[in-house]
Image 1 (cartoon, rainbow, N blue to C red):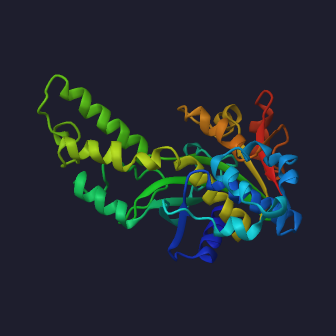
Image 2: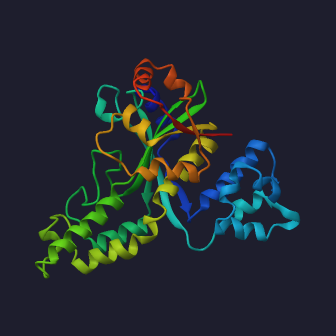
Length: 318
């Protein structure tokens, strides 16, 4: 999007705190709900689900459990909305923009601006983080303010960058990423490695803005962050789809393949390949050689696509 379009969209979205609750594989129930919405029905037979593109998620424990309790072999939309186990992770959502369209380093497909959804930890996490890690400084040891994260008391676990075109009704998810979890893991590994030769070494002697003790850092990373480690990417994708489908009302969603995304966004490093291979498949995205129409109509993007051998994307359409 053009920078002014992103700013206008942000003004419409507002800055009210939005609560997002998530548990592992919750996205499976969301996908079934979106399928029902697309078919304009409030229930689906189990046999219909088995013959649909959602067949691959039916063996997930959360879905399997719900299907066992289906009366008359039907799954109701109301059942999907009501299913919330006690163990949920709580987040808040916020939004910002990324990219100005005047430099390649923004890693945007159209060299324009992106809307960013930020998935932020809840207050309970922040209190534990402050107590155990004891960060020193305005920007904590697991943050990187050169990325589109919040720079206040709310801490961003992950973010999703999106380009979109309301004329074509398409959204392109450019990137899903976390700094916090990656940097926390690396910090513990780095300190642990140094303590092999200097057993009494304190974390702040290795990473200056961590003032907690080693056992506290270890407790935070290995115990407290553990529930987030396995779900952060799916939670971020689930939050993005919920926003795109339910708030923006857009139902054609693209996601970069690994190789095409690397080239069209001019990415210097190498993000985890699984984010651009396994993740979209889990969410029932289908591979496609057809680029989003708004990329085909953009001179900058069209030139980049022509230079890529066998470009491809993933698409989820309702």
